[in-house]
Length: 247
Ligand code: ADP
Ligand code: MG
Image 1 (tube, rainbow, N blue to C red):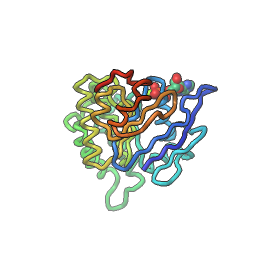
Image 2: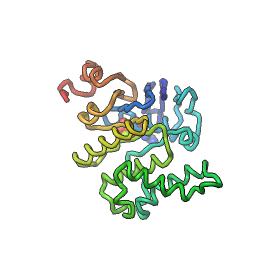
Image 3: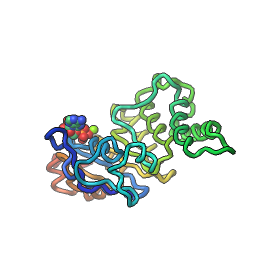
Image 4: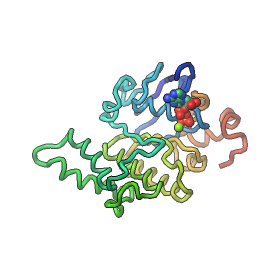
């Protein structure tokens, strides 16, 4: 579904991403791992169009998208969340998601079913799917950090994406919140047929969740493969897992 081919990006003369590759099959749950500064966020920014690659290309369903604007990429079905949660703090949980659903449906509403009526059902459906329905009328800023990050995923779902790109979805969460969030992400992939790419620091989480893992180091892809292949790879052990990882 998604092919990232030899993309590079430099900031001034610093090569943040240096010929990285990533392959994502439809319905897959793919993790990108690597130390801080490896280039994960920059890579995600090139997939979703916040940044244009200097070299290489990003192909979605056979179409090159690396030249498109963010809203055009979004319309083709890729939605994302950011490393730092991006929500409307003073609006309710319901409104946060409804705004996103409405902006999607404005493109597809018709005379028979005005966008607004459709959005209520759809917003409730999304809130239910992420477990936030009982907090629909809470002000977003009053939610726990973990719930704010879940809300961000719900907002992304409002775009009716085929693919979600999640930058450290569990950053700053407690172990319990992390567990619950990863269970949710797995469930979204399984029940809604969503394709999900995420990056994450916790190796237990990554190896227990992802079907495919891509390891980045100094802006390059060291390997992409099944969790067992990645765990056994010497270059990965030396560069990243420190040779003592037995998770
Ligand atoms: P990661 O998400 O893996 O921690 P990033 O993609 O955020 O890595 O960053 C990769 C490298 O690029 C880091 O050294 C970072 O400081 C640098 N970098 C990222 N964004 C910018 C920017 N806008 N300007 C300058 N340097 C940047
Ligand atoms: Mg990052």
